[in-house]
Length: 225
Length: 301
Image 1 (cartoon, rainbow over the protein chains, first blue to last red):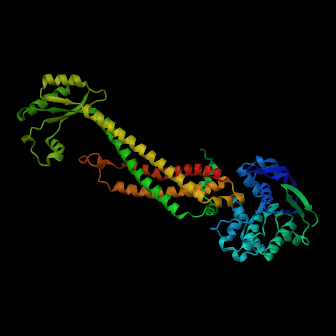
Image 2: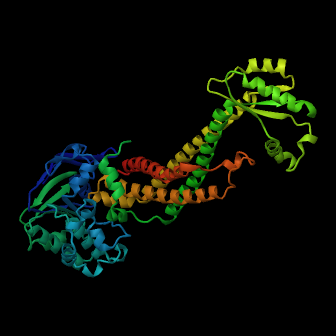
Image 3: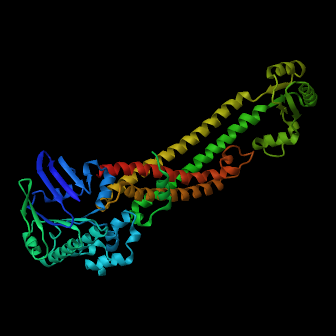
């Protein structure tokens, strides 16, 4: 899975994260919280190899990310689903093709037959939008499309960076429900958010661990929420 | 710059899905096609020049090297006697394979470009010409000159050396320049494709970021661009080559009267040589895009 050991990250002469240690266990559900600028996004980027730690070790699926070249990082990302707040798509491709993109780039496009992709589109409620282009989607639809893209390779881990940041309450609940469903399918889910109401809303649905970044360090804010 | 067999196979086979991930780049694509076409058009002419110069150099170098001319400069009444005497000398000269006096018709044909047809050679002080072809061992030109001076004072030997050597040198230089032009055209295609590929990669930085996020390797991303530019260069060069060959076809046909310029074209299997131009343009584009994409992806990481 994903394991950080005494990780630090510095940028521009300042240390953003210090002595971070965490091991994401299979099938767990995590919230990562903290004020804006605390380093939530940085920590997530360290988890999927977009950034390299300045100290310590990050292991993803047993591989030290420092030892991976760019292609190694690319291969590793096929096993880690990522959802961003400002999700990016290839705007010239239909939504369905964007969702199937991880399969396309890994040469497994034939595995996403119409039925599988259709089921995924139905799961995120975007069947009617499959032929449309990404710029035509609303904020909530973009986030759901990003979630579908993140899970189409059936990764063991899903990392979501402020997935509800640009959507209304109703849509954020819908996204949360999808992420909880993923967790119930056995996926490890880590959601970075500063929205405490989202964490409270998850209380009745899932057992989640809440991690908080404060003063560059990671603290366990609460268990059995 | 090494290409593995699987890389070349996947490039040739193509991947429709992969090709679609890079957005169409309209104007850049048209410019690449146009530039490749123009370069191929010019390359056809450079190739034609090079091959024609090569033929000329070979002709002047090999065929004319074995021939000499003897001029009989004598009054009209003595011309035939002096000609026969010179021919007798040649018959007994070691190294001479054949020797014959040009007929009036042949001499008229030689002069017709300057004096027009139907001229009366007997009314002009035109020397009689004897064509001498030497055998592979050749003859002693200086010895023959001395013998002619003694026995046929009206005969002058011209072994073509004086004017042939600079012509052969000029033809060889023209051939060399033709190949240099082809190399420069190839380099220009490479530079143009590199610039276009760099521009395309820079313009598609967000596409690259998305592809990397979903697990695309550098090779996958690069191949999408490489295929695109290779195919564009190949198609553009094919069109340019066809137009270039049509233009060469429309040149006046080669003839002995009109000289070198009308011989600027292809002959025999030489017509197949331009077919290599699109292949080479594609190859140059493939290498140039690969280098450019490798550097650009490095910079975008």
